[in-house]
Length: 337
Image (cartoon, rainbow, N blue to C red; front, side, top):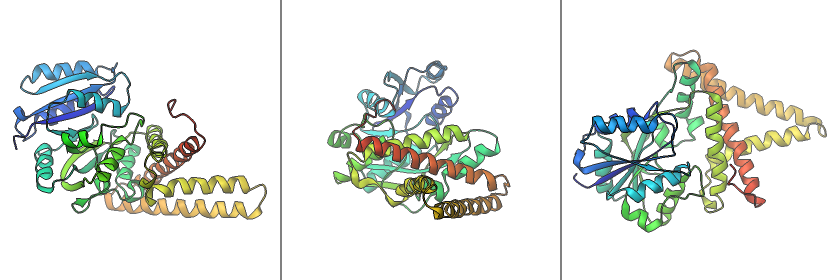
């Protein structure tokens, strides 16, 4: 277990959570002399850099290095961190995450045991606020209707998957397939895993590898997050057309069907009926999910909050995907997004 490890973390204005992450890293069961932390900061203005310096001064036994990421996009941050990382194994973490104490040990052990190109586990998704809506968003992010069957959100048996959150991989795989794609402002981890799989690597999921992840706290930030996911997924199709899964296609198809029916309403009388039926069926499905979650978790506000959160995810992801697809098909630029 003495293999040298580099933990790389992109961050920007994370003063509220960065010390929680660093504390969790400092408490790892992995030999402290065998790993380092490289944080790539997008020139934070909220005290993040000062918080990192304070923690570094209090814990001189933990190797922490801070590098600049003037581009302020995640794949660029990861690449700047990779340039400075010295480990043979790279473990990516997020400033919103708290890895369990055995996270590094399990990641390194799983890579050795399976020969996987990338390995990861489960997010224990927690609310980032105290209110009922923040609780509902956290539940929605791990619900099958919101997570789309992704095992790293919902849990499941160990084995090969399309992608894992963050991930642990050997440096040799980066040299083989290249670094993170800086043309993508998000979805860079999924795209990296696509290249790993096409190069013959396995992406391995193990639910015993766990980290806490804090979900967005309100519908506006949730909508922006899922809008970015959808928009940049469409951009990713320009390079990897075969990566779209049925679970990802459903939200844009749903939004597209609503748009078509709305346009047809003035010209086709049945369109208003079909629109009403589609919305009613969708609302009933979300309310049923909300009721089930409210009963199971003994939280009455989930009956309303879960449908609001999942609906925001679907519409934001689906609408942004359609917009990104139009930009791609018409040759529009993505740089202003």
